[in-house]
Image (cartoon, rainbow, N blue to C red; front, side, top):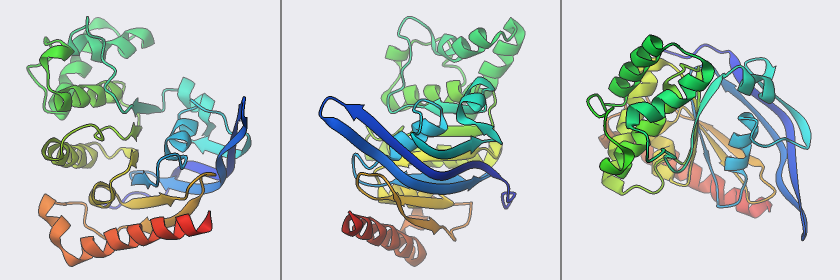
Length: 262
């Protein structure tokens, strides 16, 4: 199913400068981007290039010092208060004294969902991330990959249309990462959500995305946007195809060109 051509995240000339004791740090400069409904958009670039910072501006965790940003037609802060997105951090961030179901329940409790509604949502998202039967376990009883899936379930529980993910699989080994990549693609196909995903991995960006945003070294700018022609149904062995290798080469070239612009 082709996503509707409706922009749900629009950035125009976004600048962000941090003031530090050593002087200003220019994290983002002149970032222009439109993310359409139902797209899977990956951000890739060298460490410190601003890709996580840009994701955090979408989530209203950072405030741009210039330009405009809208999320579902609202400011980023209005979208945060309207709970327009779920956010998955690099580490699972699960409370050790709460069960997996209890961790997923926490934002729902804060939002005032009823006990029965919470139970229904928890069961549904645990099934989505293939953790049915683990709701009564504590985080320390689960593997790292399972904890990260629980973190994704928590972000999905209040059913926001947008999912923002900051390098959620970066600390996992390659075998687990491959399995979670497959699971994430399946979840995306089932839910139709718009996903923004930060990664350092070229193969991961190419495998997951409908659009790859290549960022240059600080100050973070978009040096290239690559629209992927790959089908939405993507078995892991698609990574061995000439088309996949061609796109990966294009991303790699974009990263090199971005360094040349610095």
